[in-house]
Length: 241
Image 1 (spheres, rainbow, N blue to C red):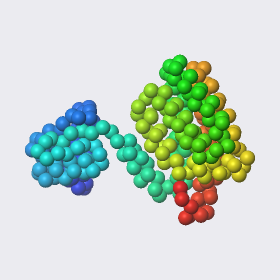
Image 2: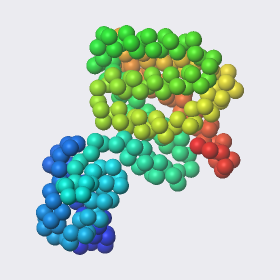
Image 3: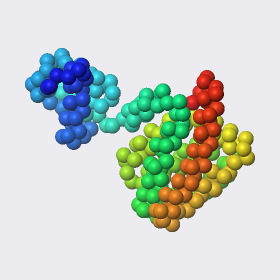
Image 4: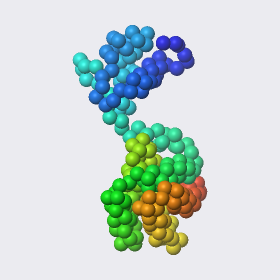
């Protein structure tokens, strides 16, 4: 392994991640032995063990005494952790998350319109219809709002897109009650439900373009309110986000 300014353990850790990816190793697949990895990367066994321990701490592999390291199921919490750390020093954190969320959810809505089965479209209609009676109940509607957006991503049929949208949406969960309070303050409660109706109607109709545009319009208005929350946070540094 070519020496660089990066600590050797970090180099091996990255090389191991590349090895797993390049060989398309799936959950349950075993890595070579410590001795084989030591020879492959041209480093000592203790360095390999440290690198393997680092990957185990990240949840990428599982270590057992006397056995080869085994690849684990992908933990979506890794994406959440990355987003949290990447945005920690961002002054307008919620706006940054919305900028990431918008294209993902637009694509999810369009894919759902193209790929959902008749039964799935019907179930989505039932879900959004059931939300109507919960509009005046802040906590219940917020939970259903998140459920609806996630179900749309599920119907998109792309597991990678689902995982990323889950992680992004999870980062704004704590702000949802503040967003609801802002809607109440501005007399906007119910407007978001009409936007949800428009998204679902387009998905049920199988109109991918209309579904994407309806989601874009919904997230545009949401983004405007999120910007207000970010402004409030900027003037009150102790305000939780």
